[in-house]
Image (cartoon, rainbow, N blue to C red; front, top):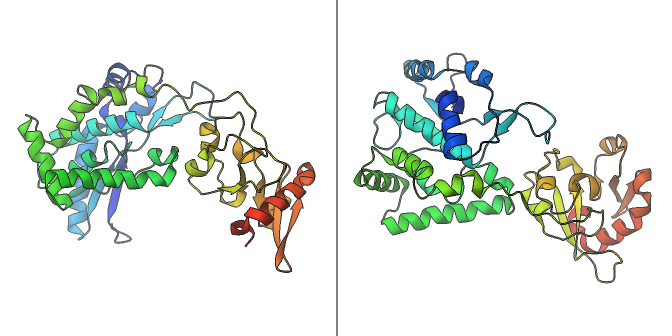
Length: 356
């Protein structure tokens, strides 16, 4: 704000709730007893009383410079890596339990800050509250009704369906607005405010928190509803052929996987074949989490390169695609040389989008 003349949004951590409150919500109310918290991450982080002061100080600082200040709820929650699935400690919690924690934190902020601070429904403030906390189709409309804006989505889009999950999310909101007889977001926020007040709550945030921790929504956010991982089959993933569930395509945030229908008469298993555009892959591992077969699709499926320098550094199976007299050529690493004829047939018959 001072040096660059920019508006500023500060993302706050759920640790502001305090260790005891987080334990109560996460482990006792929601049943995530297996998740281990670190007291140090709470002690070392910004404390709630100072956060209250900073929000007001930075709001005033911004006003003096004709800028705006906002907050975003929330960052992920730091937890201990006691499972060994990921290589480093700590891990970071997101998704459904974070939605409950963020709602609880927003409720605390509303109840503590002066009424003219936050820009949420029922308050006359100018500190914008943006939202990034376990947004799903089921809670998107309610979250928007609390007055938060903008709302960003991450964890939900990393599940099967990927970016295609956004459309039903928006449809749920518009359907709810039509049922309420409103045609804009301001009207929807007023509707949710009136509905919460009529039910005896101070506002929609308190009403939503009640539903999440004590009401009808509690079961959906409880550990019991999320303890089972993605389905698995007892089969090792191979380069060619698989159950063709398309999960690797839809859960990839970078669009690194491409499916190609298996050409008729081609001597490989499976109705679909899958290839990895490696230069688009950041090795996040999400495809491996959801793949029902055993193995890492990003390493096992054909790994295609277009950059010769990156291909040259490969030690495992990899294929370099190059333009060649109106067609294309394939260069393979020694480990993948025997698969070139299969890949060529596949790309020639069904991979025009890749080869151009």
